[in-house]
Amino acid sequence: MSSRLNQGNAHYRIGPLTTYVDARELERKFERAVAGERVTYAIGPAVSLNAATAALARSWHDAGLCLLLREREGGGRGFRYFVQKRELAVAGADDAADGPAIRGRPEEKLLHVLEDMAERGGALPSLDMLADLAGLPTRNSADYRLRLLIDGGFVRVRRDGPNRFVDILRQEAGQ
Image (cartoon, rainbow, N blue to C red; front, side, top):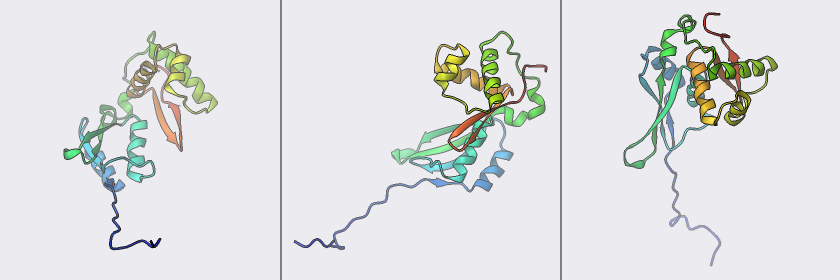
């Protein structure tokens, strides 16, 4: 038997690849979208961490401008990935000052923890650690409260390489 590959019997199979919308086109569509509108940014089995379009979508999500969603494509061929524009992205920064008060709520304690982290310049820890530091019962509670702070215009989470950092946008409502 020869160790040579019989090219006539060789079969190559390349699995489904993810296709991305051009990043400039995605920016244009997202800018024109109204709150709640979904804009497709990729179609395929998975989103790559290195794709420019996916990185752009994640940066909007981290800034609280959109939700990242996916739906299974017909026939189980993969997923359709969307950004869904949030109300805050439409309202603008001026309207954020009229956001909800957090005095006496669990978000206030979490905001103080985040302020300390921002002052030290440290990376945002896991949700489990945030829950412990803020005295919240679970990581889901920390995630929910962090999202309320983002939606209320108190903080912005930004990604820098593999780490996430928090920027404090305002201390409390009315300040």
